Length: 312
Image 1 (tube, rainbow, N blue to C red):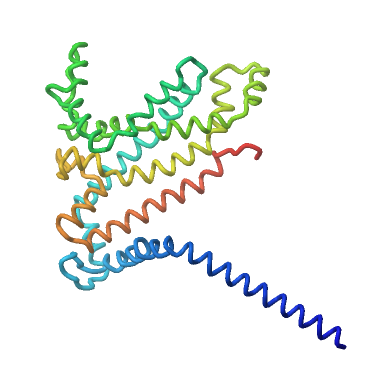
Image 2 (image 1 turned 45 degrees about the horizontal axis):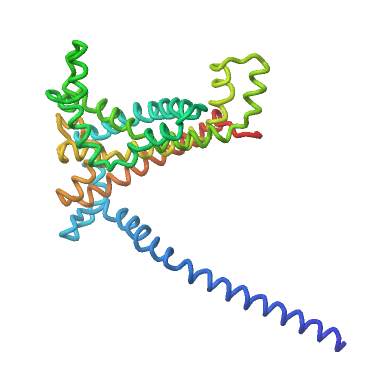
């Protein structure tokens, strides 16, 4: 009987010791994580939930505002410039994202070739991503100037009358797409990493079967690169809907000509920080969140049909 009581007491003592050890480890872990947790709550969670509330008010930074329910959302759907900004943003995303994937994969495949000095070529293609967006905008404004721009000067040597580029409503967004494609070096680096992860055995097997370069690219390279393409598709779509710095810098926030360069985030910024319509801007932010989340969900759902992982 004494032995049974002693064994029970030993088990209880061991269990209590484990609880104390777990509690001490848990507290220590939370203490180390507390700066990040506090930062997450103060600078992310609180502003996010506050913006939800502000989107139902007339809050304007300078004044607390009044609760107006869904009025901000109703006003947005009746605002022609709101729809214009959505059109401009969707136009940019529809053309830029596929083109960035196409040119990114093509450049990565060229830079993956085993030729002398390839490290230099890779560095050259990556350098534009290091240029600040404002400096990039100033550079391209000079290159695309209709009168003394370098591109129109080159076209004139071939007898071609260059377009007004940024001064034309029909050419402004294609010009912005061209500028953005110039800075896809970071995506090229990711594609290069994906290409390096493809085993040579697949290419050797395809070559034994008599496949040429195009057939190996279509049946081996592209399918095994789809996980990387999937990642860049998601990030590119999110980034395209957040386009701000280039058009804002080039148009000084005006969105000219004829608001063809007024992008969604630009219009959101203007409402929030120029006109101090923070409630209106908060409503725009949540509409953008819903759009981006919906598109991301569609991409994830459809990825099961076209993304191929090695070994599956």
